[in-house]
Image (cartoon, rainbow, N blue to C red; front, side, top):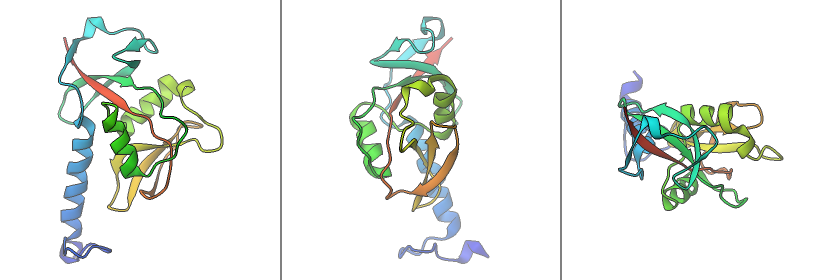
Length: 165
């Protein structure tokens, strides 16, 4: 039944299934957009928390298409809150992307001290839940949740470097 309904709040007549497919494709694309084409050998990785490629090595992730990548946490943006759209644009401007939800969890687990946790501990992820909402990560206690893309939150960018064995 939902397949035949126009998506609420849109005027373009897309069905729920069409919007869901679009969001899934966008989330997958956000994982690799604006990434360097460089590869790195697994044996050349530094210890977690050490400098790598103008940032800090945060660990290893596997993208949905099966690529193993080193995660580099790029320097923090000055304390400024951004909407989800603006946060993604800022991340691209520094040669990175907003971290996907699993990468955000990795950052919480391994580099929590590199994030502000005072009055507003929430940061954007690259993943959207709908045309109005995106996923967010707190670095106070590790929770993830949803909020409106129009909210103004902190952002951190990561760079993914493909690994070879």
